[in-house]
Length: 329
Image (cartoon, rainbow, N blue to C red):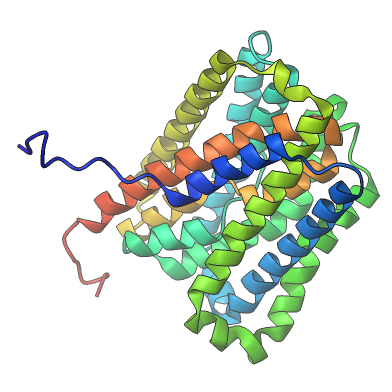
């Protein structure tokens, strides 16, 4: 056993520190007036560039390979857009009397979002899972989510969103779907270079999230909504997020094994089926909900995002420690 003098404390995630710093900057120096417009423009550009890079990196062969593994894709889809929303409905009903209304909306909203792309693939790779299937599944989840998430929001929370208009769907498509299609078209020119420089996509991924977090929290500060949430509320949101993640990870692992998937497929299902995308979620929230309430609505998503990164990092290491098999080689 390590002595107190030799035991190392776990490293703090630098990205978490950057997120906290971004929220602090938004609290001290929120974007107002013309600067709010500049921040909104920066969000549009950052998200568009991110999904352009996603499109340019995704090989058509990987799309085909993933689509032919339809049982895996169906299970991930069911986890992302069926199981999660059902959990969200139950959570919203259970917390409506103890949390501010925007926070309850945020808890339900995060369950309606697509999966992440970058971290799903990264954790699947670390765990020696089916990376092509994860690549296809996470990318398809985001493409489907551009249409399905707004429709679920309109169906499950019409009062909070004010209804989803055709203009809102078009704006989401222009921000997310169109850049992805352009990236696919540019893949023959830049795809190889991007694959040789994976840090670029990771940097744009994280940088775009910081930009949208600043814009969302700035709007919340200007509207004065942070007086509506207490420390007890934050702790309750964290606890609820942990329970939701535990249920989904447990359910996807159980279903993968019950349906006879290989361990490599199970890994892809667990990591793609348990994630929720902050890169897609915050821009969608900014379009679908009133600007004054967006900051508090995306707070549960921000907390869930950090929890899922920590838990999946631990889980990926556990999967990676299993003995090497013939399928791995």
